[in-house]
Structure formats: structure tokens, C-alpha cells
Amino acid sequence: MNMQAAEARVGSDEIVVSGRNVGKTFAGGSVVALEGANFEIPKGSFISLVGPSGCGKSTLLRLISGLIEPSSGDVTVHGTKVTGPRQDIGMMFQKATLLDWRTAIENVLLPTEMTRKVTKADQKHASDLLKLVGLKDFRFAFPSQLSGGMQQRVALARLLQTGADLLLLDEPFGALDEFTRERLNVELMRIVGEVGATTIFVTHNIAEAIYLADHVYVMTPRPGRIASVVDVPFERPRPLSLQTSLEFNQLVAQVREILGEDH
Amino acid sequence: MAVSDSTLSEGAGGGLSLRQRRILTHAGIFLTLIALWEIGSRAGWLDPLFYPRPSNILRSFWLIYVQNGNVWYHLYATMILVFAGFAAGSILGVGLGALVGFNPLVRRFIKPYVIVLEATPRIAVAPLLIAALGFGAPSKVAIIMLVCFFAPFINTLSGVVNVDEDRLELFRSLGASKWQTLRKLVLPDAVPVIMAGERLALTAALSGALVAEFIQRNEGIGSLILVYTRNLNMASAFACIFTLTILGFLIFRGMEWVDHHVAFWKHEPGLERVGRRRRRKMKEALDE
Ligand SMILES: Nc1ncnc2c1ncn2[C@@H]1O[C@H](COP(=O)(O)OP(=O)(O)OP(=O)(O)O)[C@@H](O)[C@H]1O
Ligand SMILES: [Mg+2]
Image 1: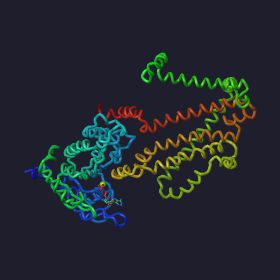
Image 2 (image 1 turned 30 degrees about the horizontal axis):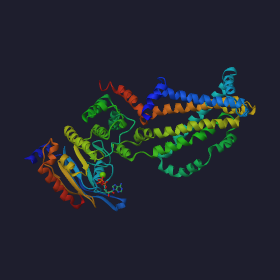
Image 3 (image 1 turned 180 degrees about the vertical axis):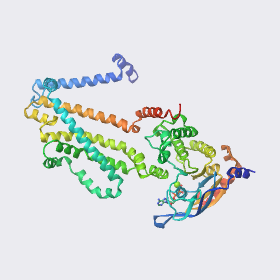
Image 4 (image 1 turned 90 degrees about the horizontal axis):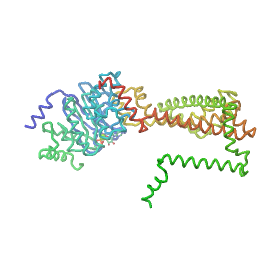
């Protein structure tokens, strides 16, 4: 029954991202960061990438974003091969990487400035996004006047301002405390649901990965590869209490088993 | 004892604030020192030839500023020289620093020369500059350029080179062009460290101007000091030196003010103000 709810949400069969035998080596081939990754990600779905440090999560994300090129295979987004950074792909990092000399709203407008002259409508949009992430009263604050969690909210608004419908998040809340992270996770789920974006979310927290995702890609190291995909059947919205349920913990155990000794 | 201390001193201060009392203390110490100097000079403990009495120095101030008014011309000449040399030197420094910073290849080749330049006392080149350019304004400006070029150069270079890797990655992921990355990330990011270089440069420019005037002796506070000293008019020489003290202080304060405005995000107190101004600017678009 739960299964059907998840299916209903993901709904569309349209594939946004696909990878065919994607591999990446560093240091002249001596470091295999990622090997033989095959995946198809449907529109509007939320994917978690989970795995121990060094299993190639960031590498996979950077390959999809076009920041680096694969050593083998290729990545396709919206039907065209990824050859470099693109407007329809947005990326968010563990550090907020805000510009200290810009107010929150000016930071959010940065992606727009790269493509055209900022209009009043753009400013209005940026302002609305800051309201969406709960920073209405801090739109004109500078980064140094914001807490770490608030800075990441600004970074999230900036990500949404790009207008990209494929969002790549590399441990976006990894540097924050437990409470802030949990709250931001819930909000992230709500927001990407609202804008209908396809989301790939990197974490090395198994419970977090399951709680957020429709599908969890479990990755293992040496060489980095996608070991398995675990489907998460719970319907949305998901209460925090879900994490204490039996089914949820069975999924955690299942992922743990795939990761083996490493986790 | 310690507990009653604060109430005691409050009573003794007669209702003065801590700040007012501090100012009074400083003024008291200063006046005592001046008085000691005056007394020592009158009593013959200090050679009045080399340590003119404060009262004489004060009279010299009156003389050179009001009665003769001859200092203004020289003060003006020195200030023009300082700012012309500083502007030329720091524009060259920032420009070259940025150029070298953006070019990894140039950077590698220029490094040994930077080290050589850094190790050489730059003022030593002053006579050569005069030989090449002759007496007059161009060689004076060149001397100041030489002494105040280096700090902006090195600081701009390091500011441009040390851009945060994560932010560069962000700009790459946004598809920023080289020019956009330069204008919106690299240069603004380097502003505080460039400003620190400019502050050093302006102080150096004042010293450079004096050296140039010592050598050329036709105008400026530096040449005036030489003239007064040669005539054993030490009181007026001191008045000139204290004039430079005040000038140096004003320059320092002025640079501080500029720094607080162009690198405002490094100074907590300015943030609120700038934030309010930016809010006002965007108000219309947000119709609030
Ligand atoms: N630019 C690079 N040069 C050389 N080796 C690299 C580079 N980037 C990644 N690697 C290597 O590739 C492997 C995978 O790195 P990656 O950053 O993708 O791991 P990760 O899963 O994101 O780890 P973490 O959880 O610690 O962030 C690691 O062994 C890493 O050392
Ligand atoms: Mg990583």
C-alpha cells in the first residue's frame, strides 16, 4: 500500500538523469574514484547517495553537474550529454560559500547575474525564495550576521534561484548540528516537493538518507561503485516519528548489510 | 576594600564618567611632561640648542603658520607630492599585482625578481632615479612610487591568488565566465588585503616624500626642516616635525575611514548601515 503511494508521487516515467557505465579515475588512472555506474533517475524523485568516506559520492555528483568529466561512459541530463556546467543543473555544497560583501538577497541573485541583467521581477523572486526558506527578516543581512544554519538556507535559496530542475546537494547540512540539520532536512523535503525538482542528495548518514529519499543509492568504496538501490516506500509528508517505526529500521538494517563491515 | 572601591572612586570623581576621567589623566600627564621639558630647558639641564623650549616651539608654530605663513606653501607641495606618488605607486602596484596574480606562468617567472626587489632597500635607488630623471617633480614622484609600490603589489598578488577554492567551484558550477569570476569574486574578495597594502603604502609615501625633499631641497616640509636645522632654528624645525606628526595622523585616520567603507564587511559596525542602505535601494522592487 505504501509502495503505491510512493509510486503515485514519483508518477512520471520521464527520465531526467541517466548514466551509462560511468567511471572516473584520478592521478593518471591509479585512483579509481568511481567505476561502472549505471542509473536512471525519474523526474521529480528524491535520490539519496549514501556510503562511507571515499566511496565516490562527491565524484558522482560532480560528474552529473559537469564540473568534472568522466574517464569512461557518459552522463545524460534531459536527453543531452553533460559536457560542462549547465543552467538546468544546480549544485549546493557542504559550505555555504556565500559572498561576504553581499546581503542575503544579493547572494541569492548571483546565479541570475551570470545569465542576464537583474530585473525587479528577479529581485521579487529572490525575496520570495528567502521567505520560502524562512529568512524573511534576514534578506538584507550579511553572511557574518547569520548563523551557520541560516547561511545554508541562503545557499538553498540561491540554488533554487538558478531555476534548475535538477538539484545536486553534497552533504549540504553536514557541518551543522543535529537539531538544525534535522529541521533543514524536513524543510528541504517540503521545498523540493513544492517546486517539483529532481533531487540528488549526498550524505553518509543512513537514517537521513532513507528518511528523505524515494530511492537510496548505496555506494561502497575501493573502487567506488553503486552497490545497490534501495526503494523507500513511505508516503509523504513523512513525520519525524517515522524514523522510530519498525519498517524504517528494517530499511536501515538492509542498507547497513549492503555496506557490510565498512559502516 | 575591593568592594567599596568603585563607590569610593565614584565619589572622588565628582560625577565624571570613566572616559572623562581618563581624558583628564592623559591631559595631566601630558602637561606635566611639557612643563618638565620647559623647566629643564630653562634650568639648563637640556641643551636649548637641540631641545628648544616648548614655549619657543609654540611661538614658531605661530611664526610659520600665521605671522610669516611660509609653511603653507611647503605643506601643500609635500601633500601634492605624497598623493601623486602614492596614486602612481599604488595604481602600478595593484595593476601589476592583479596581472601577475591571474597569470600562473608570469607568476612563476616573476617570483625571483620579487624576492630581489623585496631584499633591496628601495630608497637606495633614489639617487639613480634623480640621475636618470633630473631634479624636479618627475624624479620626486618616481622616488615615492618606488617606496610605496611594493605593499599594494604584494598584497594584491596574494589576495588574487588566495581565492577560496570552494567559492571558485561555486562560480564554475554557475557557469561564470572568467571575467565574471574576476569581477564578482576575485577582486572584491581581495579588497580588504589590498586596502591593508594601501595603508602601508601611504605611510611609506610620506617618508619617501621627505627623503626626496631632503635630496632636492627646493620645496616641501622636508627641505624646510633642512633649512631651519642648518640655521640652528631648532624650534621651527620641531614645529615642522610636529606638523608631520599631525599630517601622518590625519593620513592614518583617513585611510582607516576609507577602509571601513570599501571593505565594510570586515568591520562589524558598518554592516547594519550598509544593509539598511541596500534595503532601501531594493525597496521599490519588493513593493514594501
Ligand atoms: N581531484 C582529485 N584528485 C585525486 N583523487 C581524488 C580527487 N577527487 C577525489 N579523489 C579520490 O576519489 C575517491 C572518491 O572521492 P570522493 O570525494 O568522491 O568521495 P566521497 O564519497 O565524497 O567521500 P566523503 O564522504 O569523504 O566526502 C577518494 O579516494 C578520493 O581520494
Ligand atoms: Mg564528498
